[in-house]
Image (cartoon, rainbow, N blue to C red; front, side):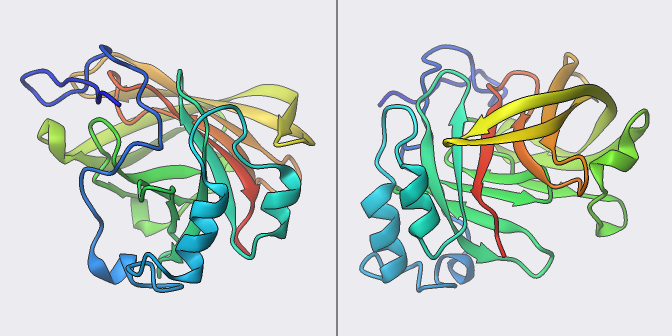
Length: 235
């Protein structure tokens, strides 16, 4: 599969946009991450056998609800805007609550609360995200307010860039995630990053608890958004 080309500043262009999350990762996270939880460094481990068995690439919903529910691991579906869905399985929980999800070919998405905080194997990978007081807010408390976090995008030569987002409530929506229906509150985050065009991220949360079941987030203004749906939440 052809990877997206990059311009002179390291930004992924919109040429060859069909970059699915099943492509092989171009870098790896530290060995301490890859060898934790089920011996992730060992391709013969039960963890990787599980991922390979149900994590096939291509087509909508590469796993059924019954298959996902029967697995011993938390899981998500993830895809770029015009790519097929990839099934990703939780392989590590960081000390700060970060969740490390791996695809069949070891691409990695790291989330913390509703936020995508690090990626491996995407165009213009998100290298780091830091939060005020190192805490994750309840998105319900941010409606009508501005929230600032900082990110590194090493491939683009961007470090400690402020991500200024203002949240608004778009109302309640019916959402289906892998054969299961939810009634969720749709929040939109209008984002400004220095030197970039404004863009927006979307979050679908459970009204009573604030738990985020679905997101659509950009790394920066020139990347395709990453869509994530929670199939089986982490315990």
